[in-house]
Length: 330
Image 1 (cartoon, helix red, strand yellow):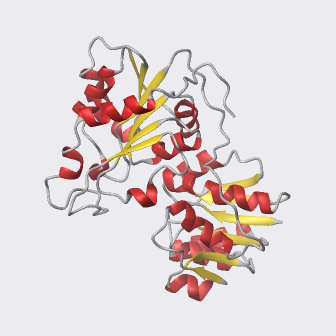
Image 2 (cartoon, rainbow, N blue to C red):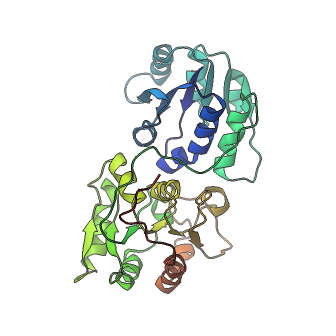
Image 3 (spheres, helix red, strand yellow):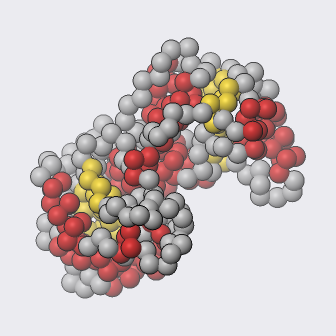
């Protein structure tokens, strides 16, 4: 059984597709997976034991994207089943031109024309469940989805460690404030080693937090980790404080106790999936969720109104869970 999967572009969305990926592999134990995705999604998911081929989709880089997509489809070749978790014309074309006879994607004008199964997931529902609904259409039996899953061995820290992720690649509207993250970090610096995370474009923001923590022993990993290293480091944490972001879902995959700060996004749709050790800090606002990259009203109250004390109290609720540092995780 050869199965082609087109992964979501964003790291967090790709990780939210992993319960469906695992369910499909459980349904077809001999399945050989071909994964196609963005660089970050492939780096995170290519370690799956049933993945035999993986490709970074570069069809929009140079030249005519339609021609590039056609050539890429022929390189991929036909599979027994192909599923796309992207709602894009070129993804539908990629499946159609690959020569695969059974294809599925989210319902849209192009998927209805090009794919054999154009699915409208049940709504409202979590994004994990929406991905399941798409794949369910080409499965012979019900797909039973479980936890998020990454096949990257977690790092083992020598001491209890708290991680802080102040960034969010999607946009500034999803980011809480550096000075508030610093206040929270200082509050727990006597009990935990502090590790700061951030992508290449978030180094300045993380450095700002570091500058506010004079006298605190911290490790600043902003811009210094590969995707695999990022997943491994987060996977070994004892506590994690983060905005709604890709790293938040990495933490859920390893069942790391997490305080997640939500502002303009739909927490019921993109919160941590099946992480019982997760606390969401958010305020109900008339203007939220707006789903905008930047606050369209200019006040950013959905995040600005959240205090450091609220997050500190949320962390305290999770701090009673057993310390995992020095232990081997599954």
